[in-house]
Image 1: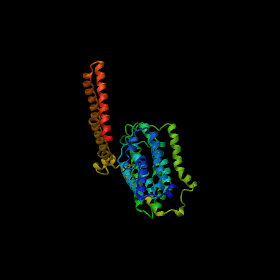
Image 2 (image 1 turned 180 degrees about the horizontal axis):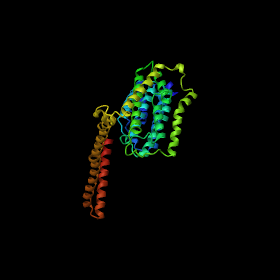
Image 3 (image 1 turned 90 degrees about the horizontal axis):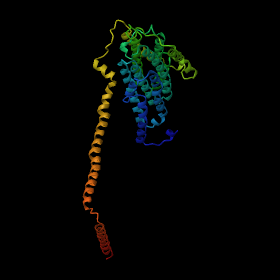
Length: 408
């Protein structure tokens, strides 16, 4: 309500919007504040499930609630869309270069939240909320399945896995369902979110649909890559005797698998999905085609026994840049970290030579004056009385002189 009646100058509205945008950018792991998310994957898997499906989505929810305030400034909306586009494409590319299974998944979280940023930037709040729901349940299922893999293999390294599909059928089925729900595959959840997202920008900003199709294809490629390295191919020493997880882990995983499959029916009951007469067939074909291209390319490279593993798609230097998050940590070192270090050195110098020097000077002056005065102490009362008398006489003479000058 306040945003509807607010009368702010363009500068104030822009500064206010950018300040409010900083929090969701860091919470949703958007470029350049994205480094914390993959580092957080070192934690236990239950925390990773909540972090990728719920915690980071809280920042996006705050962003959605702040959308009326952000819309007061077109500049803020442009910055929001730039951040979302960079993160959506960049994080999708970074995910493909990861060999840690949880890091390969978490970067796709940043990418999909980048699509949420784009949805908020185009003022599609309802689509952004639908994206959070469909992505959250699919990503939770993916992390449940890879958590089962990590438990039984005691590793997160994709290069140490392989051939788990016949040994872990429930986990494999959960991963496949979660992966299919993540990409634009009719009729699962994320397909409807992507469809409504693209229909909202079809007439106003069709170039955004290209970003969506690219992210969808790259995500499909990455998920097939992980599937090929983990569940397909020959077994490795750490996967040769890997069993299926116990029922305490399998039961919630299977339950969520069923929930992901039934989510489109739930959305239909909520009257969230459009009717078939309202669906744009061109967008449906583009979404399905982009997912099929990514899946087909990933299957050809990582499921075919004719292609040697590991697969070197691009030059080593490019792979290293992607694997290290476009070297953003080095950018931090030459900007923020360098500024903090130089500022600390300056304050340390000021504290040592200015503050401490002033304090030491007062201390030395006190010691010198005290040492000097002790030689004037005789211990005889007449000397003290004489000194007091002379002081009183001098004070009276000074007062009399000043009074005489003032009066005359």
